Figure 1: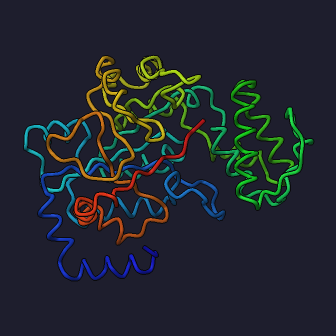
Figure 2: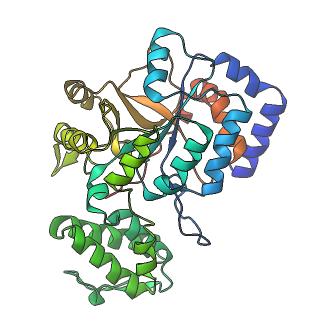
Figure 3: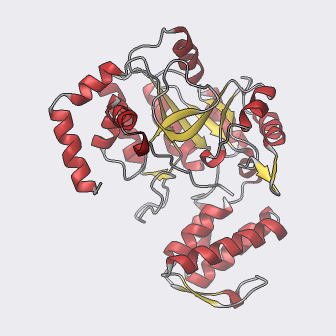
Length: 354
């Protein structure tokens, strides 16, 4: 549905009292909100809807939760109470994926200021290395660089050619080729150097991006500071992956992730978020064997009592999600719409921090 028509339809549904009806009808379901990071490039357009949000928009969302009367609970408590049938009506849990530096700088202070609990699913490789998340930074450079032709011969790459970056297909192909080369042959420091070379070739100020940590995760020390303020840290794998070389590696990734989280918080990490929302039924036995008690996806929806705890849906909020759409999701109106038309249930794949 076109955005304008969707907004008109939602306004009509709200005016007819359907949001309130849906909220009462779905009162026993848990709303798990899903966020990622905060857009730090002030004055520059944000090309990532679900990956980054403007800081003021996130703060406004938190205020709306209170204004609309949605009780916010810690994730672990909310899931226990969902199991026991003691969940407050239309309860919410806030989850934040990846652990971006912008989350440390903006999200955590806003949460602490309001006394709201939240869970950050921290992927630890880039938190440890403190280099830019290569895949996301590369996508940004290729998509927004002032110079719209990339001369690969000017870069330390095993291939040449000139690429028209305004051609989406060509841009995606060269992005994949650069990413694959870096993953196979370069270490973390060399990843950063290659990003600098790409930025220079495209006329982008890489030192400003790097020093501003636009595409960095928070450090483990910064995560520990957040944990000391009451933020819950949980599992998101070490390298943001569940396969390596075409083979499952979820058990090893959880073990490495959990070991590093032990330095951040004394709380046992038993809750998990699938990287990029990629999950399959065969993952569940591996999670149970690793002592994981819940796992969230990027499938849209509310959590009903009895829902499989290792495949929990969430409400994905984004920078281009209107307040009316946000209210429609929270109220349960969109959930009822999805239940009545199952084909409308949308799975959103989160961007991959690699």
